[in-house]
Length: 280
Length: 287
Image (tube, each protein chain N blue to C red):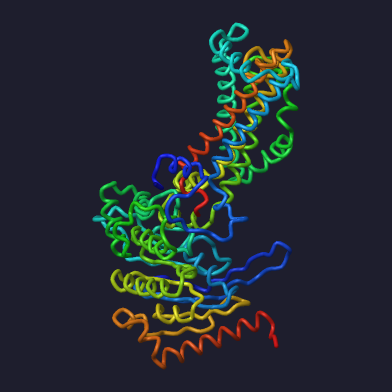
């Protein structure tokens, strides 16, 4: 099996408290190669957060399996334990960046970023080096001693990104990480995510509500549909690769970009109308 | 001239403003706009003392009902130097504070873990739910007779009472603090490699601190009130005991001393807990 995330016929059925059930995911299968960046779009209720939570290991699917094949099978040179490919719970190899509010307010910026290494028992002075390194990666040099609540929303998400990276996960999951940011900050952060993806070669899966963001950031884009939650359509797009060197603005201006965007938008509009019941 | 000492004092009291100040047009209903106002605090205290002195000077009430302020001060002076009923004033205060602290701390030490357990485990919640739901609405004052029957009028019964007064408050506060956590914080900690114990100590506990501290302030207030009441009903020492005995002998001046001391100590406890809170939980209310 090639390294990367392997999702095999996952199904997820929630029992409703008043009886009855909801099929949040049905027969979802895909393989995400190491180093790929994937974005997931879809109307609310299409199961995208459920899917991400299964990959993170917070939820166990009612059918099918999620596995993560990593290269680092421990040899004599490393003391790391052999990692089981089957995902059964959260693990540091699969990091997650949440929407705002997941930082620890009782810790400084530096303590937040150093949290993961600290849990592993990395010595203090090494943690300091790691923290400095990732503060620089996300452009927050000199902010280490600040309190989290003193930072703006965009800066807080930079800290969240740095905290995830400092733990050196192989796969980074992002659940609408830029959802609460203003348009300008959001664009800057999109550039930062692309830069990190390009420089570290991490595998990334990101959920978003913004079609533009999905197109910018996804080498692969899944458009999911609800009832039952499934992958309706997959795109393979060049923009993430191009965005590493070109400006996101220029990419946005091209005809092919706006065509794809319109296509996906009308697809999602139709789904939304189906959910709401056709009005007018 | 705007920098004269008088100006600075007046500015400090909030009577005048010095220099350029941004003015708000909407002040009614804006909590920021009604900050300060220290001067009115001074006015109210002075007003109370002048009405009191006036009442005494005009003999609106006899000294048995309303002793003059000077009498209260001299009574305070007397018990501060000579003591009351074989113990010095400081011993009476000390024994009250000792009961307060021991009862309160025991309530915290046992209540907080129970609250955590109730928020984190189905078994613990199921077990303690009926006990907490039954005990919580009972005013601690209603337990005074029972505590005296069981444990007499010494320290034991007071500490037991205060322990119970603090216990349920702390159980509920700790439980609310744990249950109020954002799940994404816990998820984040696990993906960063934290163990269950690390999640508890490094994430759940600090996240619950603001609620716990609020609970401690409430519990402290309730304990202080309960203690004074318990000492009024049956005790052999303490500040509440002091004013009951003084009341029986119509030593109204001494009763006033006791009441004022109880008020001042209660306020001092709350102020110092607020200061400690600001120091220990600077993120409170900013999340």
